Length: 305
Ligand code: FNR
Image (cartoon, rainbow, N blue to C red; front, side):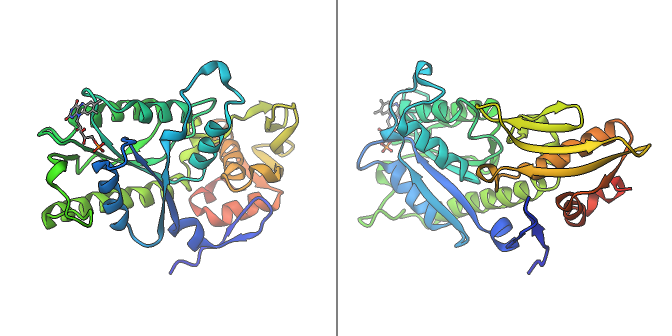
């Protein structure tokens, strides 16, 4: 068992088991049909997940059609859905093919979750396509992956899962009859889980250096990086000065309560690290959060003066 001590912006200890090992995924079923084979496949896949991964089925059928005119406030169903997406580490998407593409309800959900800011970014996803025909929804599978590029969703590349002849796949208990198919689906789930953990571990040690994966847009001002809410108030901020030659001294890191738990304090520090690297400066931590950051993420130790 790991015994790493992680501290949040208030320097409160966070249970590493919760941070690293417990994951939550959202399950999307492309078909709204009551007797949907895709839904039955999704249930089997969820039953193959390890017990530390919680799965929540997301109902795309309740989402009104996306209309850009109604944002940024959106409609209640959209906002509930976007909030749900923010709690997820991964996505399991099981979809039939409709006319060589994905069903409209699924595309609608992707469009809603992409606005006003992208709520899918950085999530790992397993795509499973299916069909009563021979091709196993190949066209839908790849159209979906095309949207992943712009949404910055990280797909499980292999195994590719195209399930054909779904109308003869299940027994009277909605279980998949073929043990071979179950074994294959287990291998897909194993690849998904592995990617879920590899990605979350790597993102915790520096992927946020890339601006495109920042959870929050930060502005560089004189002596600080900050983010303002719609009311113009600063809600996340890291302050620094250049009083010591050859170094940047960090004096405070502040994240308002409503933004906590999203890795924003870490993002603020990484922003300063990126700046210090660009200017070839060391960092003097004069703030308890930054001190604890360097104790936790030892691969940045050479940045500290
Ligand atoms: C289909 N189906 C279908 N199948 C396929 O292999 N390629 C396709 O392009 C299409 N297109 C298509 C369009 C529409 C509107 C419907 C309703 C169906 C057949 C499809 O594979 C079958 O209906 C599945 O059973 C649908 O999945 P669920 O509802 O069982 O999850």
